Length: 115
Image 1 (cartoon, rainbow, N blue to C red):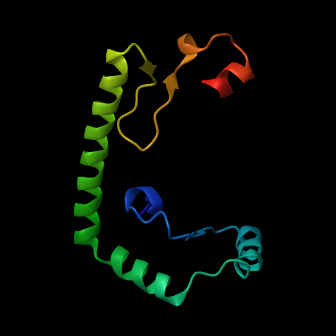
Image 2 (cartoon, helix red, strand yellow):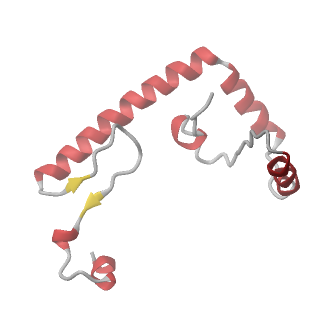
Image 3 (cartoon, rainbow, N blue to C red):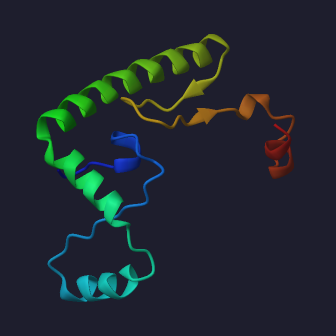
């Protein structure tokens, strides 16, 4: 399942899980050494394995999640546009890059923090 980000696409942001898939022996060796500092619990591994193995559930969930994110992104950016705040164009997502420069009293870091 390339391109899936568990925390965002499957809504499991509390799960700190990572996967290294590499044919580079140096990368694999390094990852093995580092993995002992942050092993996932067997319960987490089992739950995510079951979830990701259910291809029907995963594809339906991701499609619906994508649809909802896209809808909310359009609602959010439309609201910002109505009050004169522009955003970088995106096709969905959890983040929005807004241009708030016109709301700054001056172009300084202090003014950014104040805003």
